[in-house]
Image (cartoon, rainbow, N blue to C red):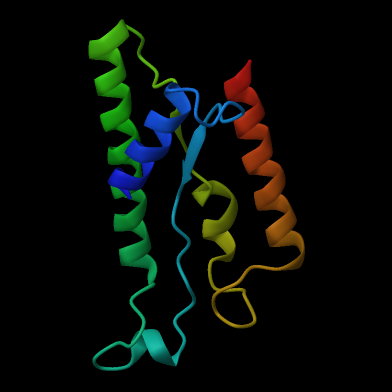
Length: 124
């Protein structure tokens, strides 16, 4: 993920992707504890503790870009990479998806509105 973000950020800063203004990393979603996650050994590792770790890794990737940017130009914010934590919205309903994985209906809309609001706040 870090390499992918570096490639996209470099292309954006070089002007190769002129409309790209921000790469948004978001928190990982935990999946409900369906049979594939509670089997022994598990078949699917997208359970709450691993989602938590994936979120921490995404935050570390973003912070790495902020630290690099701070050294390069003195800003405390990366010009291209930010992180949005959707856990406040989705943690209370992490196990409500009918297929144990994909949010629908209100959860999907609330997350979308939350993400867009956070992205728009960053542009101010």
